[in-house]
Image 1: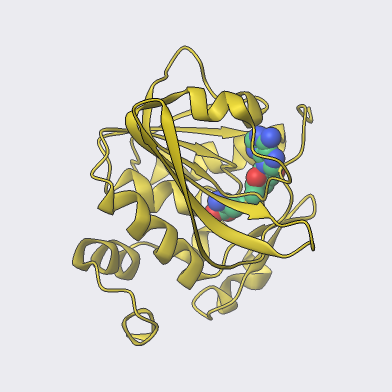
Image 2: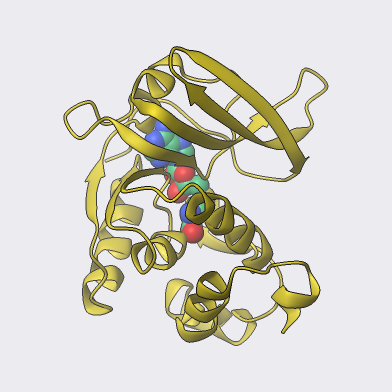
Length: 199
Ligand code: SAH
């Protein structure tokens, strides 16, 4: 109901988010706060986004009617779970091994269909490309060009991007042939996209 009040309209997104257990994606000590509209810590200085942000990003992904989707920043795996119920082929990359392990375990238990890996998602996933949608759940200061190259011909990249003044904007970049059309959507707050892998 809160998501509807906040402007989320897509019935499939609302259905999936109403039915899936967010409390399984945070520590037991925080589980009682899992259905508040707030971001929650998941360890290693990372956060699980607030439900409204997950819903908005999922709506953008679903509207693109993608076949193959790449998520950069598996984190807890919650956004991954929601996406897995709505897209045909899902790939997700996490750079912190311990977060990947936990997410992988949860997603397997919940029967989510997704291919996961540990890597620097700023490099994309060349062997699985092209993707109809690439979704970043961490904020890039400068957009990794490689990701744009891994979009299909009319693919969409959805990402929080940092402006020169330090503010973050949810941004949608559409590929139209070899041209790119950039659209700034709304202010957001995400942890930074970092380089390399943490074992
Ligand atoms: N979608 C996640 C949000 C986690 S926060 C969730 O629902 O829980 C963002 C995540 O992006 C963190 O786990 C962080 O480690 C990861 N990340 C940051 N930079 C990355 C990179 N270059 N490649 C892959 N993952 C990255």
